[in-house]
Image (tube, rainbow over all chains, first blue to last red; front, side, top):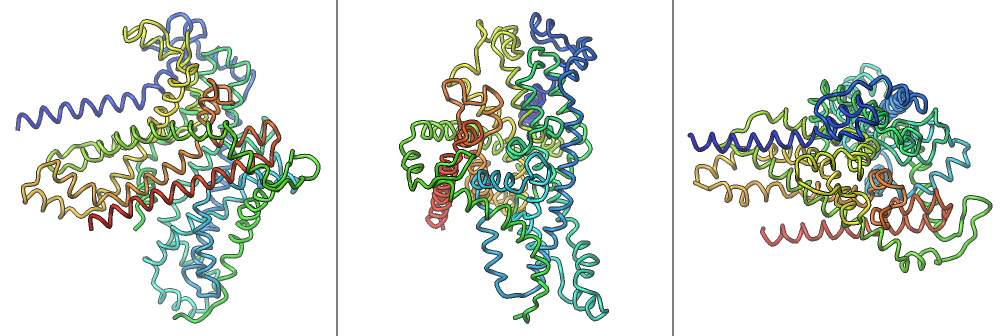
Length: 276
Length: 296
């Protein structure tokens, strides 16, 4: 028994070390965000915060309003999540419930294109968006995710194992229209799976960098990642304290949200990964 | 057989309208542009296979491919190694490690942060004279001279690879744990009763049953790794400095298209990347499948 406890002690020590490795860059960032440029240049790393937080903030907001980037990212991610959840559920319901000509063919086409890397159509996508006059708008970021093959696939699998056809028959006998059946029966049944996918979609949209970078031009429309990229080439980069603060502003709210939501996020990753 | 019901079309029409417009059509349009010299202005001029002959002889593209694989290889080795060790540790029924939920959450956090922020953060943490990491290592006496991490091809690639591993090991750990929890407890208990030691349990029970999940992790990581872009772009000058060692395939594609307005050639690069992805995925599938057959 004694030996096991020593082994376990060492293992927990190693795990704690790994936790520290996961957190230390963020810790350095938060500490440095409160220190002036001169302090960072002269004294290197300290464990305790400095007193230059407000100065750094004033320098930062002269050049860039990261809160605006936050709001933009939030707007895009919420729209994407709602639209892609709703339309994916609709499509999955269509595939799972109705039998129509070409159903299997369309489903297979969808699955095959699921494997295609996102960059394959990037040039054509950019050209199409330009032809449509939609550059520098959020439409190319919000509308295309309506067609998310993986989510449709996941929801269809879920429906096939959880939904009993007699439920739909009963509703039809009661005179419900097909779309009403979807809203009143389909969506409630799919809700757990939709929530799982919604978390994924939100994180994916939030972290998307290449598409907004290509599509957006006006700094006030930039999403957070694009704004972060712009921070690098701006005057702020001269002042390390302000730079760290800018990065911290983009990171800390996510860390706080994660504190409350980590359980759901982790469940959704597990559910999304293990496909039977 | 259910009887035909055409209501289904109404449900899938929005999806396919958007899918055809914004996914399939752009893929075909890109394919067309790959046979043209198109600068984004005027009309694309058809030049046959010229872009593709350029691609297969382009040393920069091969260099980008090499860089991408180099970075992904190190990244994946560390990411999977750590995640697997953690998963084995937490699934050991004799050790009964506690705090799984806490550790999973703690290890996952770096993955949630926007890669642009991570790139910027490490870009300045790894600075030469004033970077916090060099200051820390000097203070601890680990190094005697500041290291110019992002100015040397080897340390730059390793930095990007290890930052990637730092971001992703928690994610892989969660997936492996989900896979292990899908394995029936009976197998582990049977192994315990049969007197199997830890190593035997691992090699005869856990790893073989985890193979489908490992394949999933390998393929998703490979496809993601072939597309690595944000981190190399933002951690140095956006052109793959130092000495082009961080110039990955997607970064090359991006710069060809949106920096140099070589849309035609960039389209060919996109298709080159696609072919490489398909070939690698097939090889992975095949090799995993063959091993399964041998053992079965």
